[in-house]
Image (cartoon, rainbow, N blue to C red; front, side):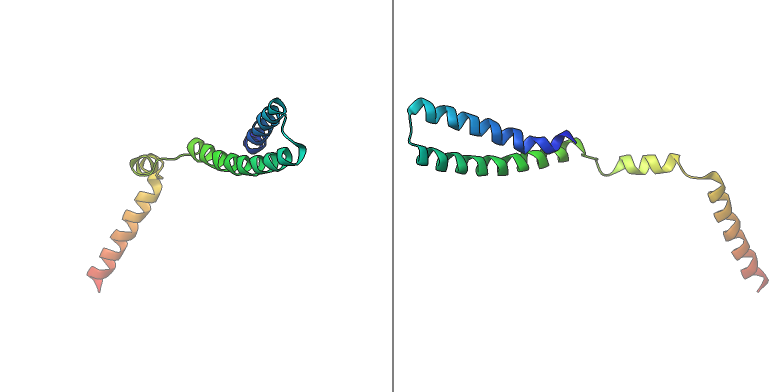
Length: 97
């Protein structure tokens, strides 16, 4: 559940950097606040995108051969025997008819 803090962390870091730069340059209050608001919105959206990319990277499951190999080893041997018995019963019924 730590992934939910990623957008907030990115936003706070960007906001802190913006405030430090505005203080260093001695900008006015209103332009600084407008700049800060724009930066916070943009970096929050970027944080959401970063979180999605990180989650997709962590939960990546390859498709293809891996699924088939896993399914072959977990088959029930009795299920195969039951299928063969059912097919033999159908063949015998067709021969008798």
